[in-house]
Image (cartoon, rainbow, N blue to C red; front, side, top):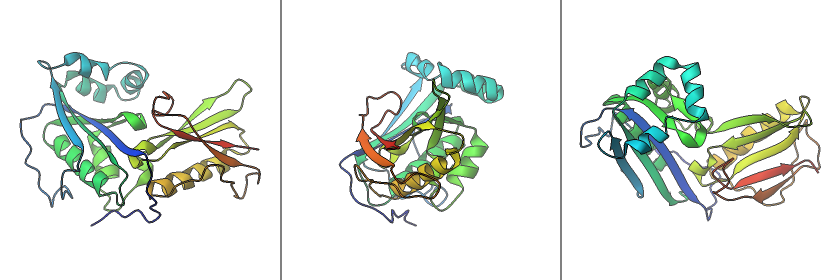
Amino acid sequence: MEWNRNYFTPSEDSIFSFFVVFGEFEDGVNISASKYNFTELPEGTVIQKYHDAAAPDYRDSLREGYLWEELSQENPGLAEKVKAAPSCMVVSLEAPDQETLDYLRNTIGLVTYFLDNGGVCVYEPQRFKWWAPDDWRELVFGPKEFKPFEHTTILVSKQEDGSFWYHTRGLRLFARPDLSVHNVTPETSASVIEMINRFIEFQALGGLIDDRKSISMSGLPSSMWCEHKGSIDDHDFNNKHIEIHWA
């Protein structure tokens, strides 16, 4: 079954996906097409195994910093399993924009195969997400239809004036820019979240947001508009982004 992109307009940007499965794995892959909804290895996919005898520093670098500390506090049992894992399997993809999301369906099947065959945790750095096995299987692999919000996240940062900055991560998986809205007040937060979610779904399903596009939505001022900014080197997004201005 194809995962169609109903609003598809080709982008000049590239798809980039990056998943890490921690665990202990045998060499070789023998994946069942029917069990894992897998039809082919997406062109541009790179599979790399890192273990104690090969680049341990790389694996260790994934188990440090803010996201690792957050996992260790929120789910210490899972963090211990990740810490004890003797290896990790990295599944990455860089490719031109695609008319369907079959590349993602196949990638999810492959990641799930590794999870079922020695894996203890899936790490999705672009989304800032550590997946416990049961959560991954239920929320990502289990649904037969595409779930865009399981691969994106909305982050909220407090600004000096007391307002908030809402910004996304993860849309590079769909060859689309992330989203940013500064100066969000408590009164406008629900409407801003709804707007962001609409844009996430629209872009994941292949839509392109025009530069200087105006926004018309109940609960938000009619003066809001979109500006394409940034680059993949921007550490806040690791992606280009669209800044949504109030006026």
